[in-house]
Amino acid sequence: MSAQPTSARLIISVTLAGLLAGLLLAATYRVTQPLIEANQQKATETAIFQVLPGTDHFESFWAHDGILEPIENPLSIRADQQVVYLGRDGQNQMTGFAIPAAGPGFQDTIKVLYGFDPNKREIIGFQVLDSRETPGLGDKILKDPAFLGSFKHLAVEPVILLQTKGPPQHNNEVDAISGATISSRAIVNLLNKNLNPLLDLLSQKAQAEGGPHE
Amino acid sequence: MSEKNLQSEFLKGIWQENPVFVAVLGLCPSLAVTNSCINGLAMGAATFFVLVCSSILVSALKSVIPKPVRISMYVLIIATFVTIVDFSLAAWLPDIHKALGAFIALIVVNCLILGRQEAFASKNPVGLSIADAMGMALGFTLALTLIGGIREILGNGSLLGFSLFGPHFEPWVIMVLPPGGFFTLGGLLMVFQYWKDRKQARLRAEQNREPLVKGPMVV
Image (cartoon, rainbow over all chains, first blue to last red; front, side, top):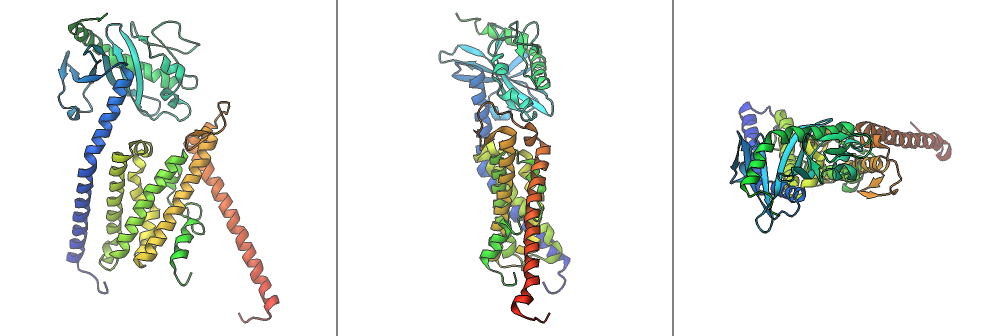
């Protein structure tokens, strides 16, 4: 270190250090990657069971060009694919569809998963997966009981509306959160936008399943 | 601090040279992730791991690392440990990882860590470097936990997720929003500066008195 080190020495030492760091990171990646993917998968599964009451297991489909294409490996799903999960109860009867949707919120994209019953044509469950709404105001979309209660039996036709004045009067209205009207409206808009093009497809699929099983 | 010992190197980071309140380093995470006590604590713990590991490595390799490329070496070492923390949190503590988000990766550019490598670990033996890193990291963790705690109590009416004041407390929402970070940090810096000023004033007063008590002194 006393004399000025040659550039060869500098290059070699930095290269060596980079190589070692790379090896260490590759090892960490190998250990943690399966766990990380399992965590994400588990988070999705938990959400599916939550928005489709009574669900025992589910199948994954890719909705595109008017068909539902079965997805064999859930890890192969790309972010730009519209996925639809078909939930089934213990007797293999359909409990509904769990549908992930995303749309612009007040600050950043809001990602949600909602449960849809194609026979009643109602939304029967709803959960926010990811959001960066204002803490204390917009983030009430995660926990406001009146707002979330609106999604237990929410008719989707002709269109979902936001009720900003008082409690909802009709079964297609969502109770807006006071102080978070923009975030509430963002949710309603993204649901309408996401479900509209899927409605026919999901009804067809439900009919193929044998309609209401009363 | 002419003679260095483990204890004083460890303690100085916690109080006397606290990285946040005295040195005013690492402010980005101190402001950004301290909207709750647990987030501050987790950020502090992640920084603790990275700082201590990097200091050990930099101190152990200080005679091998060529001077002209030392900064890039430090950054490489720090970045490696940060990525390990990032992966590990995502694998074993996904909730914390989600809450801290991009700020885990940003530990790389926390000037507190790079600063300790350049100012301390690269010039001192491993033992002292560990003591210094642990003290500094602990001081940083305490500072972040304190800021997070204050902001959570005022802005959310809870501490570590437990509601403190019951349902009728109207939270002071701005404290968990970005401006609250500046208010809290500013207030705490003011308190620390006040203490420092008072201590200095007392020291000066004692020095002025000394010659009278002990008789004439050659200066």
